[in-house]
Amino acid sequence: VPTADARFVRALADVVGDAHVATDPEITRGYCVDWTGRYVGASPAVVRPSSTAEVAAVIGICREHGVAVVAQGGNTGLVGGGVPLVGELVLSLTRMASVANVDLVAGQVTAQAGSTIAQVQAAAGASSSGLTYAVDLASRASATVGGTIATNAGGLRVVRFGDTRAQLLGIEAVLGDGSVVSHLGGLPRDNTGYDLAGLLAGSEGTLGIVTAARLRLVPVQPFRTTALLGFTSAFTAIDAVVGLRRTAPSIEALELFFRSGLELVCEMAGLQPPLASLPDAYLLVESSGPADPTDELSSAVSALVGVTDAAVTSDGPRRRALWQYRELHTEAISRVGIPHKLDVAIPLRALADFLVEVPHVVASVAPEARVFLFGHAADGNVHVNITGIPVDDLAVDDAVLRSVAERGGSISAEHGIGSAKRKWLHLNRSAAELAAMIAIKRALDPDGILNPNVLLSPVVPRGTVAPRGW
Ligand code: MLT
Ligand code: ZN
Image (cartoon, rainbow, N blue to C red; front, side, top):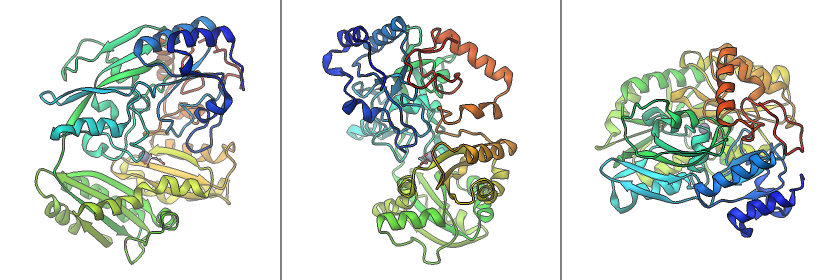
């Protein structure tokens, strides 16, 4: 564990108060390991500011002392982007969790970085406003606004509402040079130069620390129907994805999983399989609208070829029961062992081939590995989860990510590059693009103190708290 310089800790405590700087390893440990257990680091201290001004002061102190810093929200990240893998100070945003200024006229809300997605959804929907926040994901109760912006999180409703970047009407952040940018007016049309909110979305804590955001809200759809469809193969399932996207505009979610993952979920949660015939491939489809979308969804489904079995319901508890088979995948897979989680996107026309091929790609490198595939089919986003290989064995990651790039896919669809995938970033980004990113990094974080181990950065020797220059 890197030890904290006493003057450094004193300076932090003078800003946030003694109670909000932790150096005891018993306390800091939980901030140093990610949700999967694959990424374990160490930190000299965890600091928990309560305001944007305090965040700026903390960044000033880090610059003065040459200490690198990693911002952390709900610590639900899956790519080693929010934990101190090279001895960074952890800056936790969890005390900054207010959600305010719900504007029913404009359909907007301002949320501090540490508020969870569930808190934003609740605040948006309070007093029967008829509004909600469009981003939704299984980790909604822990994942925070700041973290979902930093990773440009997607989640379950991208097909209808877009990703986190698409919800951003303005942002407040402390940049790496300690300056505060605040643009929270929320004008939906505002072409006054560079889009800093869009730039910070997906920047993974390397350019600035997001402290608040102005977010777009969408109308709550009062009617909702969910269908679970079974298919004999990935090919018929992906053909169905293409068909449904065309014929059912009411679709809000279109999720994919396979029998192997379903069996794990059933075993862990003590559930019966949802479709008696135990098909190999599954699509979970949800439609919503101001009127009952069941007819539209049913006629779209009946036009599909290759559906072997189906369950359709608009009853709330039954719908939630169907969702469990999808949402419990992450937890069920983690019980098998610490997974390698490769979150990738494939062009729809190459998706079925990839789904069929990827277990062979893995087996050619690690015959003992198990592969579980699930994800957000409408966007070609597949979560390739691999268990049964050592956490630091990168041969499988390499083979899968190369196969993704060869098919014109992205090595990070929604989880980010983090420290997990930065050595493969060149598979998706040209030298000119990387040079532009580094120029931006240098401009906004001149001392290279923000998340130096993530996205673009050079390797920093383990155990040091001193950032490397850019
Ligand atoms: C999901 O889609 O459930 C999340 O991205 C989490 C995961 O990939 O395990
Ligand atoms: Zn996902």
